Length: 123
Picture 1 (cartoon, rainbow, N blue to C red):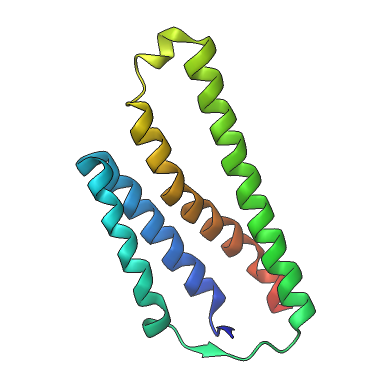
Picture 2: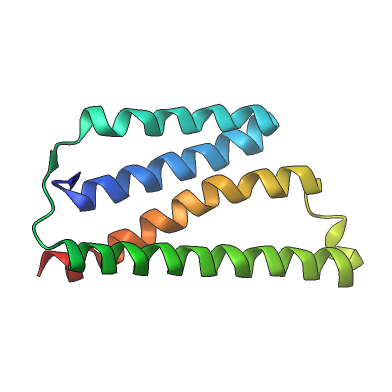
């Protein structure tokens, strides 16, 4: 099963990811509770059967792999800053908050990349 309107599904991910990042910045790790809004997506959006399963799996793989690459680069960039640029380390939030932000940031990037690539699947 897939969502009938993938564009709307990815926009929902973007909004929830961004909202969770904001709530984490305001409330700390307790802001992760904002991810619970994502559980409403199956009730809000209509689903349909997958017509071309091979094309859909290729699309899903492309979106997921691109999102993971961006997250990997973000983690490497954080490590480089923390290890090699001590002046910037003082300006960053505590390491625990940076690692917590990775979860909603993945959701945000997955939504953005999926939104950009939905035109490929809709052809």
